[in-house]
Image (cartoon, rainbow over all chains, first blue to last red; front, top):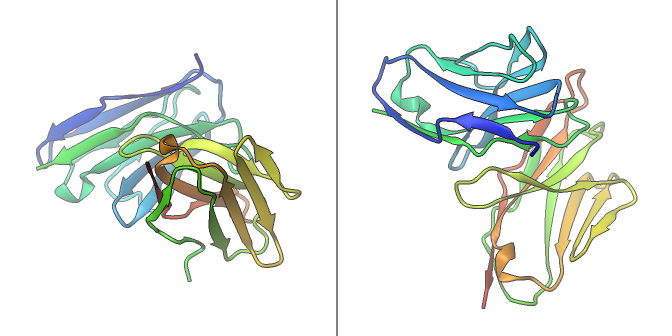
Length: 113
Length: 111
């Protein structure tokens, strides 16, 4: 089944404790992206990647890192999480940016205390 | 002015009603347009791409009005299961063809 898989679904952590949210897609998509979604602010792009070893900042990259060592994986790293990073996170992929619809993972709800 | 704007609603309609949402965009050079559906706390899922000539998928019709810079989504014969938030997404005209998202329109279909 074609899908984007994120893990974990739910995560509660404390300020400053490094964490990684994994994202994997099995559709051989070139483009992958991370979003966060907050009430009243909608979907905001954190980072995106056009291909392996190519990553770029989105609209809200501060406090996040990503890597794209393989086409299928695009992990999101929070080196020192803070409470303002409490949010619902989505990974997404598509064959090409912009002209193709995005396929989303089922989300990671992160709480930082 | 926001790049992509939607009426947040909520739209409360009875089953069987016809309801329409609009989404306006500010960049006249935008090229690709999409409607997504998002259920509470779940991931957005593509509902329809929007083509220049308009397109229909069952009870759903999407249209693009380039002159007035908006896209629309029409839902006929609303079902309870149509209750969700409807997000529009528009690509910008830059080299990266980034998707710009509306904040969504909330629809509640009532028995």
